[in-house]
Image (tube, rainbow over all chains, first blue to last red):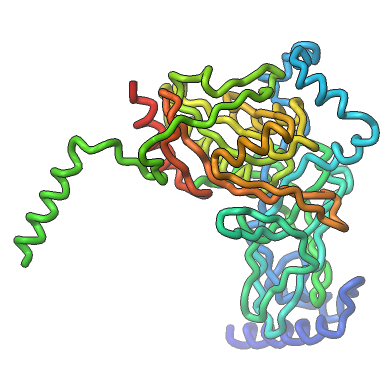
Length: 208
Length: 193
């Protein structure tokens, strides 16, 4: 048993070392990966010291719920203010309108390695959203300020937590409904570890 | 010493009887008339706060492109309504857009009903929204986000304002108040005559 453990440890060490020299953009799996034991820390990226935990996405609707969609457009436009709004939706604003539906993904990145890493970007299927960005939330005396960030640091032997009111993966211009129980495939690109795939489950967050 | 402490506790417990409603949120003391407003609701109809006396109104200022803070609070309020059961009939949750430029009646309908079909989503011109936000001590500011597909965001305060059946502004909930606390207060206010 101990021998297996030792060899697994050796393999992991080799893998960790191998990953250090790799380029972030196109990580080519080192030859060792082919013979690596299944005991790898993360299933999708055997050479990584990073593990992705608890990935989830907030449900979002780009269509109207059945209960209210019965309302006809003319009914909605009886009020003058509503008319003004509708008139404002001209072509010039169409692009901005398209970007208006958003949602967010949250997850925890655990780094079991001795070197820090940075999450640089996240991507999802292009039919899902126009853009996927990394954002953070700053609470300044009760005023919530959302700002894009270039990267999210994952400390050595530590973790980065993307959670409500903090770092999040922001989907801008969501194109389709995301319903509870569905799965969204995310590609996380790290400075050191390269790209890691993760399945994020669509769910309504538990309430405090 | 222990006896004195016990006596003090009993006195404290007794003094609680007959005092005004204990609320979990930050009380507005004395309660004052809630600043009134008329905006367009998610069905395109006018919504006037003072016309809704007899109901507890729960007010939140946000924007429909908000992916993190607003959905969290609206989700908590939706959970509170579910827990209130039948008593939720006396409670109206109202989401007021502080992004009149990007939000529309249609977009607000789609957004708020995702959380609960009973929610109202209100839209108004900036000229109406600005003094209203100020009157409740809330704040918002449009902020350009260069390089972001979102183009701009809205920095905004994230408090929830509670108006009783008599149209009096009674309390403010901080962001992230537990659903249990929301339910306790909303139930107490819903039971007032």
